[in-house]
Length: 341
Ligand SMILES: Cc1cc2nc3c(=O)[nH]c(=O)nc-3n(C[C@H](O)[C@H](O)[C@H](O)COP(=O)(O)OP(=O)(O)OC[C@H]3O[C@@H](n4cnc5c(N)ncnc54)[C@H](O)[C@@H]3O)c2cc1C
Image 1 (cartoon, rainbow, N blue to C red):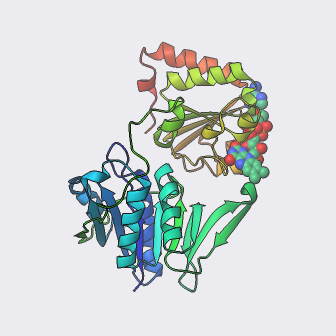
Image 2 (image 1 turned 135 degrees about the horizontal axis):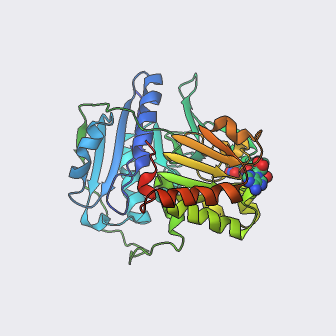
C-alpha cells in the first residue's frame, strides 16, 4: 500500500504551521485515489512539544505521526533537521512527501531530495494522482506563462506546496492516530550554523500578509507614492495589511514581497479590498479565494468586478478618503466597526 508523508513544520512561535492542515486535507484526497493510502506526519521538535499537537494530529486525519524530539531541536537547523528527516524517510519509505513551500520548507525539502537522490517539484499550486497512481504536481513555469504538471521518476515523489493554495478540512477528520517516537541520531553532528536570535524584518506588513484577515491591495490606479500612502492610511484605519498588484510593483510603488498573484503570494483573507486593480487573471489567481472581495475602480467594466462581492465605481482618490472619513466618524475605534463575518 502507498503512503503519503507530510512534513509537520513547527513555527518559531512553537505552533504547527497552517500549511500542515492545508496539506493534511489535500493528502486525504490524494490517499483516496491511491486505494486509501495511509497519511503520516513527520514532526521534528524540541523535547516535550509534540504533546501539544497530538489532538490536532488526531483531528486532521493522520494515521501515523513520526516524532523526533531533542533539546538540540529548539530552533530549526538545516543540518540536524535534514539528517533526521532523511533517516526517518529511509525507514518509513513513503511514496509521496509533501512539504510547505515556506522559508523552512524551501530550505529543508531540497536537502532531503538530494540526499535521497529523488526528484522534487518546488512551489506547486496543484496536486493530483494520475491514472498510473503517480503524483502529478503542477507549478507555474517560464515566469508564470505556463503551468507545468510534473511527474517524478523516482521514489519518494516530493513536492513543496505554497501556503494558502489548499484549504484545511472544513471539519475534523478524526483517526486513531499512532504516535511513533524515534530517537534522533544527531549527537555527532556539528552544526555549521548557530542560532543567535530572530530579528523581525523591516517591513512587518510583509510578514503579516499570510495571516492577515483584511488586505488592502493597490494597483496602477493608485498612480504614485502619495496614492500608496493613502492606501496605507486606509489599511491602518481598518486594521488591514497592504498588498499590491504586479502593475504597482513594476511602477516601483510597492516591494515585490507584497505582490499578490501568480508570481506573487496567494492569500485568503476574510476581506480583500482591491483599489485601482484591473483584475488580470494573473492577479485573480492569488486572491480569488478570499471570503469577501470589494473592488474600487473607475472603470465599471474592469474584470475585478466579476470576482467581487461588491464594488465602488469611482476614483480611488475620492472613494478611499470618503471611506476613511465615514469609518473614523462612525466610531473612535474604526477597525472594530468593520464586520467581516
Ligand atoms: C507571466 C505573468 C505573470 C504575472 N504575474 C502577476 C502577479 O503575480 N500579480 C499581478 O498582479 N499581476 C501579474 N501579472 C501582470 C498582470 O497581467 C497585469 O498586468 C497586472 O495585474 C496589472 O496590474 P494593475 O491591475 O495594477 O494595472 P492595470 O491593469 O493597468 O489596471 C489599473 C486599473 O486601475 C484603474 N484605475 C486607474 N485610475 C484609477 C482611479 N483614479 N480610480 C480608480 N481606478 C483607477 C483602471 O481602470 C484599471 O482597471 C503577470 C503577468 C504575466 C505575463
